[in-house]
Length: 336
Ligand SMILES: NC(=O)C1=CN([C@@H]2O[C@H](COP(=O)(O)OP(=O)(O)OC[C@H]3O[C@@H](n4cnc5c(N)ncnc54)[C@H](OP(=O)(O)O)[C@@H]3O)[C@@H](O)[C@H]2O)C=CC1
Ligand SMILES: N[C@@H](CC(=O)OP(=O)(O)O)C(=O)O
Image (tube, rainbow, N blue to C red; front, side, top):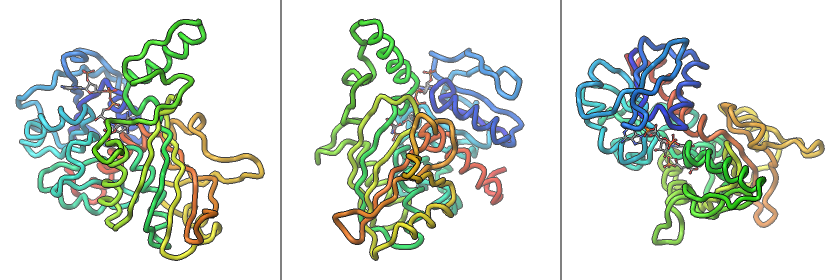
């Protein structure tokens, strides 16, 4: 298998290198691509130095079987044809193609089998907040149909990329030194603050991030589920958290829900309130799963349940999910 990563220098690109090593993904060759900014940069992978090549409209993708792209939506759109021209499968982390009818939107725990139908040779990796939401929802959907979801997200700085992580760190250092924090990647100072805006606003007052949760959840779950989201950027370095309220077609007990979460693929329950045990981003960054806790009944609705999730959005929300898609395709003989 010859594979490539486009956007290797970024937060997600670097996570791909770690995940591929960690999972011993079968590779004969790995080629790294970036823009002029990182072309020539060397990264060590499996003990060898790989040099980032500049992404261009040429024949560099000839002979490559699989390409993971994480270089932003405009780059994915511009290079789709160049990447897939010689038959490579493109697994794209950006929002470029997620809602296209001829592109499956895959979370392996929920709808892996849809990888079988890839007319454009493109598979989309969902938005990171949506991935952790649907992994948790699938556990409940398997026992009782979910009609409505209200979710409030607490999104780490790293969701906005490598430069945003640097900015949060720098702002924190500046505050400690009594200096004025520098603001560039986010609209406002993030250190010591919360910003109730992730991505730009749409006409209905929701942000694009919030509308992605609505639209992508329906496509992945394949149901009429309705998701109303409020997405908040928080001064956490890594791993997104979500407070979720669901309404199911029939009432489900806390015990039923806990059992469903406990046996769901990709979910780990941490829910021992007597000992103050619940998922927290500081302690779960770098982990593979979606962690669920604070499971309780919604006091306003007999068919309602509420819970709290945490998951590493650079890992399960991006690189790991995309690698799991490739692993599924390999297992099923859908990739060379
Ligand atoms: N961070 C996260 O938690 C998540 C991110 N994503 C998505 O993944 C993608 C990457 O995000 P992230 O890693 O955070 O972003 P970063 O800003 O950290 O990295 C961006 C990467 O894209 C590359 N790039 C940008 N423009 C071009 C270009 N014209 N040609 C080639 N490479 C280019 C950059 O290379 P160079 O340094 O050479 O410019 C860099 O490697 C985005 O689409 C994002 O929406 C999805 C889920 C979660
Ligand atoms: N959801 C990411 C942003 C992102 O990368 O989203 P998308 O892949 O849908 O563009 C965040 O926390 O900021």
